[in-house]
Picture 1 (cartoon, helix red, strand yellow):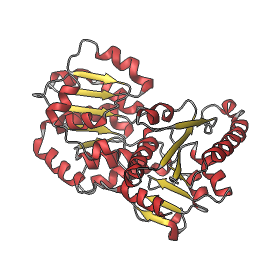
Picture 2 (cartoon, helix red, strand yellow):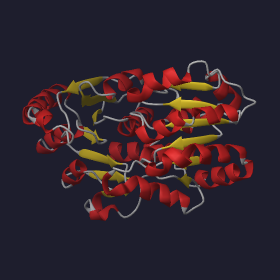
Picture 3 (spheres, rainbow, N blue to C red):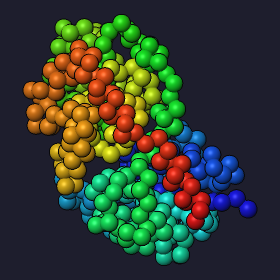
Picture 4 (cartoon, rainbow, N blue to C red):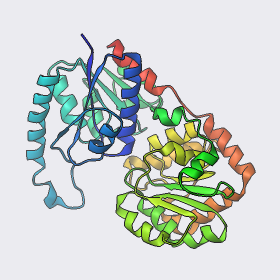
Length: 361
């Protein structure tokens, strides 16, 4: 009889792509495995998981809305409904184990599985654990973390330090710089900057790039600009008539963007950093200033201290970001130093290690 495993969570690429990486490693180690994703209806995972070739079921769940308290009125009802939906999924699929990767949907699924005595596994990508994961960690079989020092959040005897799983398309990429640049219809002879704010976009980065778009043209530097949905229409309008700017809300085949880029502008979430280490890219980090415990700044500073990245604060992005990125795009020696040092921090087998632990039970 084949092993059946549920993978729950999502909301952002930082949760979804590690989940897909873990699923790929599980399938590789056990080709007969049955996998089912559970995500939040209307969220990104409902689109990205099927694109990666996996089944997903959506549940009615949402997070607490800090900006509009009135929108939270329906929250208790959604939570109760989600637990009934999860009970049905668990009854019909009968999983041998449940894996949580963070995001709204992981909580009801893992909580329900724990109540039924089903083994549960958590992947915590950040150096500062989320509240849901801390709560779930008390009864989890094992907790996979990116780095040491997580005993303050989880029972020490259940922690396994694995690193963060990176999509196999990025780990195994053999795409050349020229192939990457041609993929975006750009010119391999020109320096190329990739600006990415993660799957949902980054307001501070996008506004700084938008304000200094002319400077890319003046410096004969190309721009691959991944904006996220909220800024996509504005970026498309601003980029009209500029043959050296490629822009879109989302980049599905990120391995081509990494191959094309001489320099990357990025937030410093744990998953973005894991991918950039594997891709060996010179990066200007702009930490998201409202992350819990300001952990994105801590993440970026960790690399800066190792001469493996540059850091511009979000509040300084408008004045300093594009200038810094363009200076770096001209400085080949600095690029090489950053590339070498960030590459030393890469972990390429995290998904395999996590899959092995899950299948061990």
